[in-house]
Each structure stands twice: as C-alpha cells, then as structure tokens.
Length: 149
Image (cartoon, rainbow, N blue to C red; front, side, top):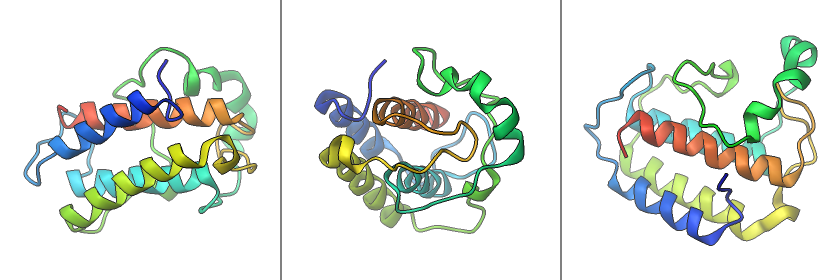
C-alpha cells in the first residue's frame, strides 16, 4: 500500500487534490467538497500530533481487532464510519481548504517518521509511523474517490 512517506504517493495526491472543483458532487457521504478537505486536514493534524483526541470506549474494546483495516492494502469502504470529532458541518472556503490540505500533506511527508504523533489514534490505539502514513494515504484516497478524483 502506498503511504505519505513516498514522494510519488504525495505527488499523486497533490495532483488529485488539484483536480477537485468547488461544485464536485460526492458519490457517498454528507460532506461537501470543501468540508471533506477540512476533514482530511484535521485527520492529518491528528496524525502529526497538532490535534490530540482522547480514546473512545468502542475503540478501546474493538480497535485492536480491526486495527489492520487502517493500514492494510485494501481501500476503505464507502461505509467507513467517521470520527464524530472530525466531522465538518459548517460551510468552508474551497480555495482555502484546498491550499491547507496540500500544505498538510506536504508537511506530513517532509516531517517523516519524526513528525508522527506518539499519541494513540482515538479508535485504533497506538500506531507506528508507517501505520499512520499508510492510514493517512488510505484516508485521503478514500475521500478523493468520494469526489471522483
């Protein structure tokens, strides 16, 4: 599986983010395109430790059993649940969110393993830098596919 430590994967994602349009229609879910980009930026903030969320009870119970879903080779399914603390429901500026998401992707890549948080994922628990990097690639891919890019 690709990950955000790979320059080619980062270039691919940036190119796909650049192809997003303000009027893009989602294939599933509730977020509009600018909201989705803000959501993805928040997830990258979580992965890099700029945002820290507490563990959730259900994650403590079943997180370790389903943790491989986060970093295995299979893309996330359309029905993947969203962490309620990362849901973006207010209106967002498309251009600003697009720029911010590209910045966050590049920051994560440039920071390398040292950039990854030592805090546990709210659901999956402790993750290695490689698991964070793969999971963040999968998360971005999931949402870019949601908007057909």
